[in-house]
Amino acid sequence: MELQRVLGNRRTIRFYLPHRPVERSKVQKMLEAARRASCVGNVNSAKAVVIWKDQSSSELIKAITPPLGYQQMQTAPCFILWYHDKAAYEINKWIGNLLDLVDQRRIGDDPELTKQVIDQNLRAAFSATWEQSAVAPLAFMDLGQAIAQATMMAWDLGLSTCCMSTPRLEQIGKLLNLPDTAVPVCLMSVGYPAESWEAGGQTRKAPFTDLFSEMKCGTPFEEDPQVVEELKRDGLVQEPAPLPWRDDELKYVRHALNLEARVVAPQFQQPAPAGGQEAPAEGS
Ligand SMILES: Cc1cc2nc3c(=O)[nH]c(=O)nc-3n(C[C@H](O)[C@H](O)[C@H](O)COP(=O)(O)O)c2cc1C
Image 1 (cartoon, protein in one colour):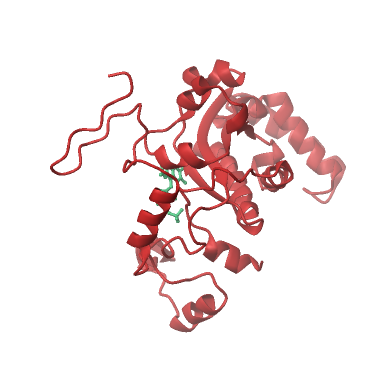
Image 2: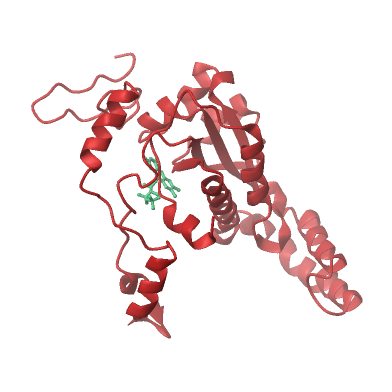
């Protein structure tokens, strides 16, 4: 599929076909796409654990379940726990990665001079700050880029995904054997969609000019309508949600998947529907 159409078709999918397994080869391709993402100094801090639902204990599934995850956790056959590894920023490793970029002729034009600058100037500067750098906003951007690339690969392969909030390290660290240096960031459900590919239309976003400025913040970057038409033609901009038949599709999907009318996973308290009884929390 053309890249612009992949970007346009992507939307968060929360209902999957539970009976249709996700091929291991497709997950490998998603992980490879993540590995190919740009990252600070090529430190490769973006890591993941693939969790196959049919091989998981109920304890693990319960531990990774986020509050807004009922449908995804009930129906997805595969999950990916994405985490940031602070160890990737350890000063000697970080400097080593930069020197390796010189060996690959990816940075600098004079290898000897570039290595000298890295080893002397940068090592001294980074030595004092690498532990802060390992948890700075820029460090987590690497994981975002990796996840975005894995997501696009999933869509290109006919799969769909939902990023979800993640449980804390103390809840899942032991179960998944994560190192102390891991910072879990996002749980992603992966599966074949039980919804139509349109999934009720493209998710509406904040107005373009609210988000993007030109030269200084507050001076909107004005859209050229001609460009918007080109983006529609190429598939990046699509019919906005909700399409007229979306409510019927949601009822159909819920019925077909035998799901309860809930959004929040059973172990979390869900507000009662108007006039109804409060959904009980698990174990209550
Ligand atoms: C980091 C992150 C965390 C998210 N957490 C949840 C979640 O816990 N439950 C959920 O249903 N959706 C979650 N989402 C999905 C967002 O609600 C969704 O991406 C957003 O509404 C935009 O829709 P779109 O992905 O279709 O463009 C999350 C998305 C991201 C990127």
